[in-house]
Image (cartoon, rainbow, N blue to C red; front, top):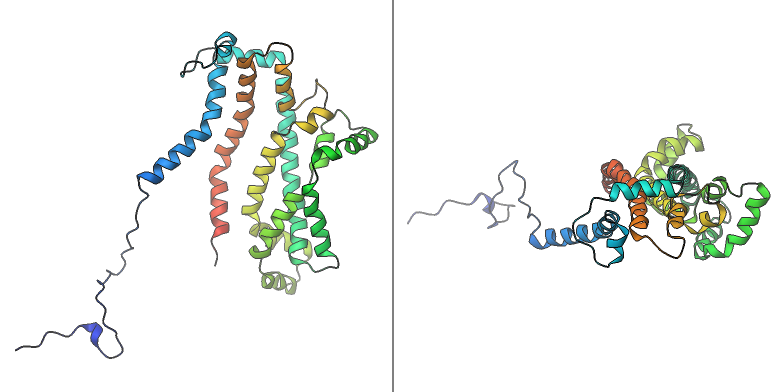
Length: 300
């Protein structure tokens, strides 16, 4: 009786395996997401877009239709007329420009100062570092309302009351931005890389510019976007510090609902117009933001 041919895996030092041999150069087959995953994603997308669509839906009808309750599910033809009324009722373009200016300056300064302070707390060794960091984090537990009176007095003495400087100056840097960048830079920038830059004669500013800034780019993009959104939607302090003729977009929207009768079609048209710049920002920066997150997630 003839012997069976020997398996190449049965030789000395080569354990036998019953697994099929993978063809060289062929990638393993991965499973695609199923119907449940796509269904959940579609539900999340529809749920996120529903408030914006509802605002646009009521804003596209007249005040009488909006006051009746549930309007038709299809948009009407009065959105442009309501948008023209919004622009004529409040200083919309001035408020929009103020919001763009304040949000951009505050977001950029928060990223710059947050990165510098986060690098100092993460990589530099100095006396009282832990106590200072604890003090910075503790300020996040203090409600904004507690500091309104002394902050208003300070802005009044500086002569900034009623100007956009009263909105920009208190938010040039935030405790959350410092803490967020510190937590990211602890692991994103190896100590050996900083020591190598110092041996090459790089100064602290050079280390921050050439080593820390490229590594912090993903976190800086997220922090910039979140700070821009938070400043754009802020209402409490701008409502106190700014007059009616020099508002931000949120303060201007509040002027639409003053009086005994609230025109919900007018109010929601203004809310829709105020949301459009944020949507444009996400469309323009969404790909770069995701690419930055993926770049920060890859190690090695």
